[in-house]
Length: 353
Ligand code: ZN
Image (cartoon, rainbow, N blue to C red):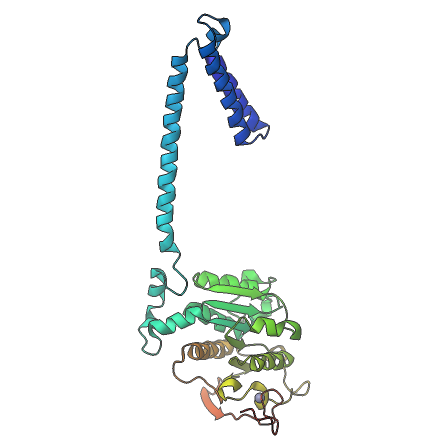
């Protein structure tokens, strides 16, 4: 009997050593034990082969019985464990559009706000916001959109984090120098709020991809410092009837507005019909910019996005808010649509509103 068991063990572990699968090895063992049982039943008592394989069937039957008990016990344990895991799973994964307990607690200060409440928070969770640029304005905008619970946040930028960015681009850590900005920003946003989905696009926004990309989102935030990109963002947002929350900076002054011709507000090109001549609009690198200023303006962009999504208060449609950090002043100027705007204007006799 011992010799048979040793042979069985050698077949089982030896087969495993040679990479034979579990199924074939079980089959070999079944054949071996079936042959042994047959020997016990068929051979006459005292036959050398029968003596060598145990000498009687009772011992084998006891052994198989014990093995069967162990297998049944293990199968039962496995079934109980799977049932317990299946029961625990729904608490982890809330159905779409509903909140887990941890999220309700996280957004409690929103939910008590009369203008937002539960319905407003649900709109934020269902919203899809695309942020152009993960730099100075994108940093606070992305952080606050994520913290506020905007469900899907896209970000597009083809830059990598540089040492000179860190004086104001607070979403990027020192250790991220040299990594693409969108991946650095994705890591920070998801570390701050694991309940939101972040989609990083590590590439430049171009005419070829703009329409398809914008189609996936409800609201667009523009925080680039590149005029050509601003015009492209505006054209695409207007063509798809999507609100464009736009921020801009220079040295000590910031501006923010919501361009939205679909809701009768002007578009970016109504206000800035032509790109400034080269050299007249120096970049941050050339002119300098106060570190906390993009923090103020980018956070204002996140505020406007929350208002656009939830309908709370009045978003800055048809208004440009100007913040002068050097003198601590804010002022608002009214903006009007230009009938002859090449992007959103009405050509004579066109008949469009
Ligand atoms: Zn326009």
